[in-house]
Length: 461
Image 1 (cartoon, rainbow, N blue to C red):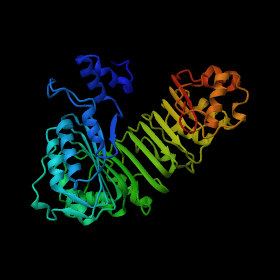
Image 2 (cartoon, helix red, strand yellow; image 1 turned 90 degrees about the vertical axis):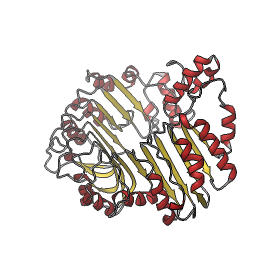
Image 3 (spheres, rainbow, N blue to C red; image 1 turned 180 degrees about the horizontal axis):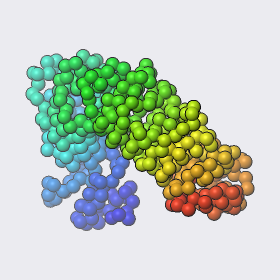
Image 4 (tube, rainbow, N blue to C red; image 1 turned 180 degrees about the vertical axis):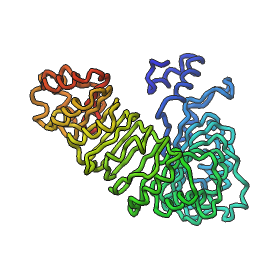
């Protein structure tokens, strides 16, 4: 089964019962295999096409476990009946589920009977609920409706509300989250984020989630940072887009209060200066920063003793005024994407910070004019095992002097977009040495190199 492409695995279900079972298990475990329905009507065709053989046992695996259903209107009888039939049939095999609700009216009874109750004994891990443009909730008094069953298997929740009345959305979210006692991860949109934050970390929190480890904010405000510090919230994983009014000092407060627990951190700002924390991050292994002004000397063994991965995106990189760097012995992977301030001096500084660097991803136009950068990489980072070189443009001068016909043809196709960017042809070191001998000579000085990859602006190798 491991040699069968995932997109063809479904065709082999017809061979025999054993093949059917093995293919179903393979489809369930395959990555990024989400079945998307643009409307509820599409569920009817799916149920007819993938109807189970009545002779098979009830616990026989279903071929899919990831579903995305759009435009659900629970106030309509047809949608209500179809959704209920689908979850009764496929509910036991679900692992990841995204539901997009639309329409001006939202009925809790239909949510409870058609969706929630059939999922009670499922193995659902991730639940994503998107609410859009509803302004009527029935019943108005949520206590008048029966309580929802506990979904103890759900670990990850995604909540987003667009154009909804917050007065109605808040009690609805509370009723849903109260039935998910084992949540470890919550991702929130802008509108729903304020509501969820008040329910968990407000002055009078209504929910107690002891197992919560990961929060993903699409907009984190200054007042919320103050509450996180005040309530002494401890998270293992923090992913947040800082509001445009958040300043460097508030960002430092957010980081310092999570110094004892944080394992991974991903932050995006509106080009504020990344602060130098006053506390040590004893468990932090991965940092991703987007749109920051970042002094690379901030990353030192004193503050980040176990940091292994550093990724900087669309950030301005600056050097310390005194030119001093402190190495981080555990740092093994650095990725730079669309960063400003890239220079030979900066690469030397990174090589000092990460003396044991094993993987380096840097936007160097290999066939362009930035030859000094590549020379500095090869001279200052002799222990690299993986080197990824990407460039943002391809010019006529770039493809001149490469006699290898395949390489020249590939570059021309990438430049003019003649073919889809999924071609697997790659540029070898030998072909590079023919066109530009010094590149091959430089790369050959890195005796530990195991993987070398060149890609264009779209990431095509």
